[in-house]
Length: 184
Picture 1 (spheres, rainbow, N blue to C red):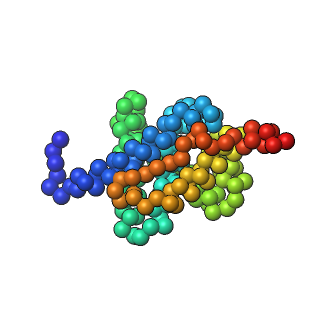
Picture 2: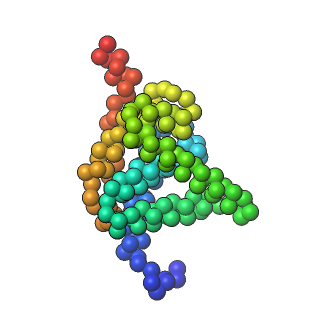
């Protein structure tokens, strides 16, 4: 690989580490087996977008210099999606159209999630049900509980500039339907 003279490989490693954590978390089997997220290309994209939105929302609360990290992670996300489309056999002429769709998914869901995060649990559950599950149900309720816990954990983190990012273990989030039935 040719190294460009003004490339910051240290910053690239940090961005790659943060994005790698997002992708690894989004691929956690718990979401697909325990939460009922569809184990499809769209379902996996939705989980990457969700985790990316959560980190970007957190970075917005930081000083301006950390906002560049968010932009760089988004840029890597776009490159990764382009690469994945090509690996899945999408032709060169169709990639821009598909990338436009990925962009619409990201910005649409991002706006919906940020608005729902600022509201109550019902709004968050509704946004997740509509965008990830296509229907209401216990999976959306449990995922909403996970998202709230992820936001709490992200709020306590401050090592983003060093490439450190942690999300909660999805297995530790109780199923709200099961928990409700246990109390009854």
